[in-house]
Image (cartoon, rainbow, N blue to C red; front, side, top):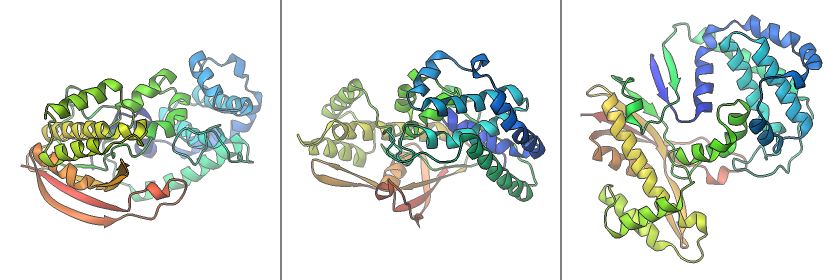
Length: 358
């Protein structure tokens, strides 16, 4: 299927385009690079490298032991200087990025930014990197067997809410997505080391990117004040059920709620407005009668001691219908069991919402 994907996160688009381009590179070149890597690694003079900058290095040195930081910098410099094929270069950089947090001062199992308590891996970085590359190349071989018919696919680093940047990409026949939740996953907290190490963003841009994501839990005082003013003036541009929900959540707040919880009603309002803008823009990008499938689950929050079970599939359906979409079908699905540090916060049930442009 020929397809285009949109994401505001540059790491997401890099990984996606790297996967899409796996069909176009020769594994023998990867094997050749890996066979020479140990020798090049031992001989490399990091002081002569021109692939770093002080702002980036200073930030990363705060999150890595010096020995680990130097090893990753040598690895990155060798990949950039020795590999000419951009598909192979991005593949190797993504493999290195995938093991980055395991050797950082950030707790690897925690999605949030917390200092490490767990033990470091016993395996050397270069050995771990080679193992990672070999494991992924085996998967590539399987994919090549399965995907014999090449398609024209790409991931674009664009904001779905900004229509002017999207108008050159239109006339789609169908859309599918698993949209973000309100305040659900801290993508940038989890990925910030990779974003900076890969030089996709500058350290000072981390907070801005985080706040720009749909569903971000970062919000300014000005945005919160604006929400309260709109609430008082009965000026919330949302379906009635969601206006009532936002107002009810705000009225539930009490002195026991910390600053994070106090921000939730305004965060929910911003999320619904962002999703409304998304539905409006996607509607303009597709052909008449095109389907739009969204996979999304319910989540919950507690304010003033009261638990709110948030029926996000229902809320997004209301917003979609408010923007011209017709609900064709909603299918309830069970999710797979999550494990690990954040499993208690995982979504237990999801719905496949199928909309259609009238």
